[in-house]
Length: 426
Ligand SMILES: *Cc1c(COP(=O)(O)O)cnc(C)c1O
Image 1 (cartoon, rainbow, N blue to C red):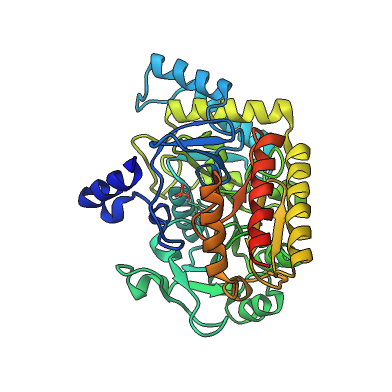
Image 2: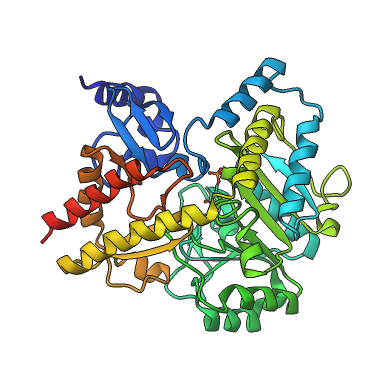
């Protein structure tokens, strides 16, 4: 059977590149994308009946694995009651209360349909609140495909940036400055010069879109302190990290209170959701209370709210975070041990259930170092694992995830596959 290949050929006739989000196309690793028929716990099944241990997990949302029974039954019940009303529901109130309780810096929250919508709206709000236009972001951080955030640095940390995508006018990205992640000195120099023009600094508190890069000591603290000094807002993009590393945001762990937080992925339990929330005086600038327009036909969709609430309920009750961390620690020990023995440069950054695997001497602490990684080796690892029934991200610069459903059996398969690959490289 070659149904994956047949479907990909057909898909390319009617869908650009055959996919509805570029990284699904396997361009970075080569080969034919797998068309998925169903999932169950840590496993995903393609249309040819192949089974994979899934370490992409829909790029983050599925911290409970595929088809958690409580999430499935919450969704089914809501579908029976109606899929969308375009009028408020109790579920939205419950979800908002749950999030405000879990993340103290969020006094009010609004739901949207994707992480992109959350960051886009957060930026509009920050600009309105501060009456300034400049946004600071960091190289290698991804905040969705918002025009003004699709920018990378020019030659140095201090350059105002050029668009990362065709179709984004230079005038738009010229309101975005791109600095280096973890470069405290560079950030301070920039703020000394430009701080009074900055509406907001947006950052992934643990970067999860260039593999995984952890914030170095003092980095996030510096962003908080400096934005306060310059009366700019701090936006933590916790679309990946929200409810992934503890019940709340990474901000709960490091004790940093941003002005606005962006959420998505896990809080939708596998349904399309985003959210942004923060200080009450800032959030009250949104329509209908204030002058900042923001809306959505399907925002706060009841099916999505039901899936998200069910997911948060399980996370709160079971507190899987210590076990996830232990499972990941064991995995990392196993593979880095094997790589060391084999004399292969493998650096793994990890925090809780997320990891970045880099064929790189390391330490990998910024985008500059990330891109020095050996991507050919990653691609051959990817195909080795795929053949052995383990699905890791089809790109060297995406996170490796585990879920609450990743049993010893599933992890054993992944660890064996990785070790076997490492041995082939000796
Ligand atoms: C995935 C992601 C987004 C974008 O979310 P979408 O739902 O894909 O629009 C924004 N920020 C971060 C940190 C993300 O990982």
